[in-house]
Image (cartoon, rainbow, N blue to C red):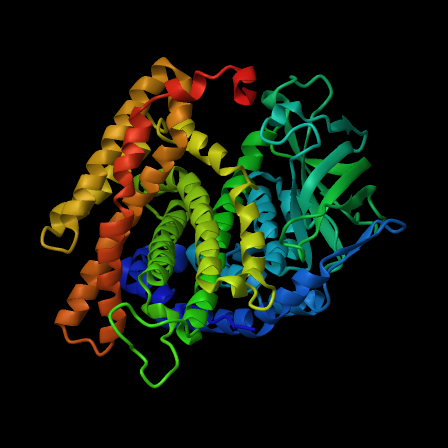
Length: 592
């Protein structure tokens, strides 16, 4: 069975050399002492945890899955998960980027994102238990009363408890205005929560003694729409030690992530407390969802990296046929399949999408920290605009590519990839959900064109354009400047079309949304690859001893610009085609 190795060299290259993130973070008072020595030491330790503790449980966790006891409403996680989680929480990893006020370490959010990438590569199912807890922490930190924060945050941050997001119900997913869960006010100021939620990650398990549910419900007489939704915190175990009637009603039978307990949750008059103002639950929940959406993007990136490592390792050893240009391994009965152009195409496509996606994700993560902690309000605003704009792009694009890369990796391996022996078929199954949960990728595209392009009257997207244009002007002789400039012009043209046509007819924006998001993502990656190529070129000129590493960056950038960025032409044409051919069909014509 292949072993996962954290891609630390590339992670550090992006973070330190390309984004120059340490000075940016050190300009934030809370991170003034965050040095490269500290950051790299933490990443090194996280890599050891991912490689030696989490990854060895990935295959067995998939085969064993979670089990449900209907008599006790309890869930048992796969063997070894509880001990691994204890080691994870005991090492302080749940507290990494959390507020020091409630026991966190106060380190940068982007550092936590980098750790999450490694965790997702190693064991996505196990990583989801602490992953969703961060969303609960963020929601309570921003919207909870002081009393609720003191009651729940210390144990959530320490990892002694875990958290969930309880949104979806059998009759509604994206359209949360249709929820039926009710919240009845009680004399003591709490609320009795009654209803059923489905697809709840970590809703019940045996890793911790208490699980804190963040639940969307409607108050009596609340508007029957999204404007009538409130958010409540509902613990599994009350302060008295009594069991709150919030029970798991069963486990979902899933295609993948089988080590993650995905539960039906029945709230039977469970005691909860209001988070934020009445009827403003959706706004509060978006704090949690935006955090989760970035995390899901990292899940796609992490799985893609794991799949690439497996398929590349296989391809180097697999001997089949001879190179079209003549034998490369004359001492062997055949050449490694890495000599074949189509295999190389699949491998290189994985490589450039992963490394470009990593740069975009880390760039967004740095903006999260600037938005949270910079002293200058205008700088915070600009960074927050970029986070809001890029969150749907990171979520949708990195998960689309996570699946594509895993699928390409399986293709490289042929029949071996289709078996359980190599583990890549599990990655294909596991990563598929990332394009669906926390808002399907189609919803992310609608969010981008429907909300984010208009943010601040177009301020956010203008900020992004200005950043790219400024870099292009400052680096006129860098590799691929012309290609990035052309891509930016295509994106700007598409943006103008979506904005103008979408104002006249929302279906025009809806029809363009998915190709527009991908156009935005590929343009962003082109910028990132140009930046990476510029750094690599400078290092080679300066005589770096890591010639292979930097040379590979230049060649990867060449591959991206010549073979991947060409998609922009088609994507722009699809945007400009409008809605006509999509919306012309009548319902009965689909079956005709």
